[in-house]
Amino acid sequence: MRADIARFRLAAGLAAALALATFGGAARADSRLTAHYGVSVAGLSVGKTDVEVAIGAAEYTSAANGRASGLLRTLVTGEGVLSTRGTVVEGRLVPASFSARTVGDDETSSVTMTIENGDAKDVTAQTSAPDAERVALTADHRKGIVDPLSALLVQVGGNGEVVTAEACQRTLPIFDGRRRFDLALSFKRLDRVKAAKGYAGPAVVCAVTVRALAGHRVGSALVKYLDGRDIELTLAPIAGTRVLAPFRLSIANMLGDIVVEATAFETSATPAAATAAR
Image (cartoon, rainbow, N blue to C red; front, side, top):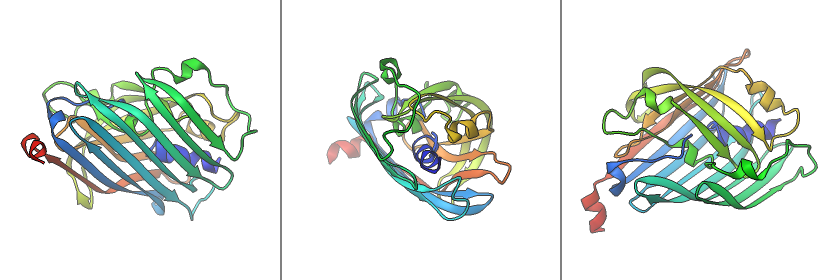
């Protein structure tokens, strides 16, 4: 259970965590996000996660690493490193490769995979608990997917405001090399956020429903825990793009909410002319 929760927090939530990101006219600029997140349970710090995103004219990269320990270890423990790389095609971010390594109290795992036209290819997944009974994955579960880190980047179409209800009107088909699950988003409200360092401004809050489809352990405590849980994902814009990234994730809990929130959310964009001159 603890290793499953650690992986979910990092990959799907950042743990959870959102659509195959695309962006419009800003694609010819270099845009970056450096974010540092604190993880807390009932207001008590239990870990941290760092994320780096770079979006250029021809390619993009995203990486995350995090650790949780200490208080309430039965809910949040472990550490992990994830990375993805892809190309920018006609303004769309198209993932090409994904890798992850997670370490928990009861399981260590590593995954590498390539992605072609939205389908997972050449998947290599290793685990220290290979005999665990899991819901069977089929070939269809690897089709029409997005990796967890690319899924953390959410496009808003058009030319108007970026922080809108549209960001929450989607279902995200995520495959992390071992598990296939959907995150169904729905609009909840508009808000304003302020990081201790970096961004302060409008954000959009989405309600999240987690639908585990395959690859998870039979009788998974994590799946049971998330079923029907009140989950909110707050998204804030990356400068120079029409892409939003997670600013805050909260999961309601009787013992105190589990919260992943940005303490630093720094974004920047290099104008296209400056990029071409380098």
